[in-house]
Structures are given as C-alpha cells and as structure tokens.
Image 1 (tube, rainbow, N blue to C red):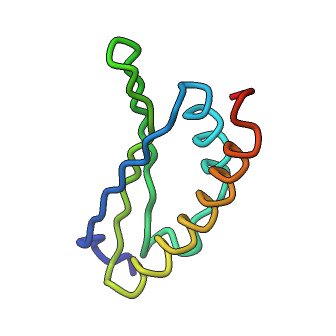
Image 2 (cartoon, rainbow, N blue to C red):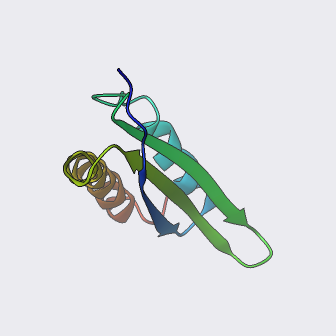
Length: 93
C-alpha cells in the first residue's frame, strides 16, 4: 500500500561552478531511496552563467516527519562528503 507523500522539504545548495553542479548530481543520482513508497528525492540543477549562480535544488517528499528526517539526514551526509571533496580540490573544479 503506497501512502501519499504529503510532507515536502526543499533545500538549495549553492555551488561555485556548473562542473560542481554536474558532479554533485551524478554522484547523488545513483543512490537508491530506501523506501520509494515512503520517501522520494528530486535533484534540479540551477545554472545561470549570466548571474554566476550555480547550485542544486533538492526536493524531498515523505509520508511523515520521521521518514523525512532519516532520508534528509542520509542525503546531507552524502552531500557533506561531496562538498568536502570539492574543498580539497577547489582549484580544479
């Protein structure tokens, strides 16, 4: 039985370049969602060369607050690792 994903959270992650945006999306997209009927994640790129604005918008949806907390926490941990890698190689990305 699939329940409605009625809880929504949106995070905007600013980045320094379109290359970082592409790397983040490619790194995060293959990760499967633990319970697809209870939680979903959608990644949207934000690249505006005119404004030098780069980043990723992440939209989370879940059946309840607990599932949202666990899913968002897992995603943030993965994002943290990716961003730390960007910091380590900052001149190359």
